[in-house]
Amino acid sequence: MKKLSSDSGFSMIEVLVTLVLISIGVLGMVALQSKSVAFTTDTTQRNTAAMLAQDLLEMTRARGKIVEKLSGRDFATVDDGDCASTPTDADKQLTCWSQEAARLLPGVDETLLKNEFHLCKATASGTCDEDGTTLEIQLSWRLKSGECMNFIESTSDEDSTSDGDICRYRIQAEL
Image: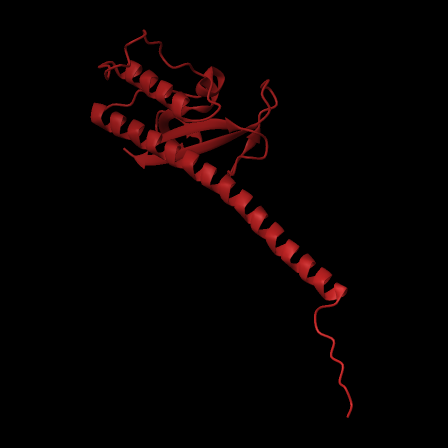
């Protein structure tokens, strides 16, 4: 009678190949998770910008007239406590709104409020003029370089002391 020898188990090469495949899968899941966090953060910021823009649009429609704020111009000044309740003056309402935007969006400072935020009549996207029948609202915020997920436009802010990209959210509505 012959005795059959049977080798059972895995060879070292099989174990190493399995470890490599599992490692690739785990690394892929980690990369996917980090992208997921970045997209979630971007979505939250864009939803906040959309909410703020919608609030401003509704304030403008409720007033029945447009108080334009063009890029490069400052918002009106308000006294401390003026924003505790909604001011009746349209310029002050706009300024209180800008303070709320600066509080809710990351990296918003006086320079960004002055140069990147606008509310105006427009005939085409990004062009403010008196003849337009479209109301355009643009909000901006600053993130670290490479974190802005603007698929349309994103600019590096070389003139600023802080490194980063400026993310923009722009809506237009017929008057």
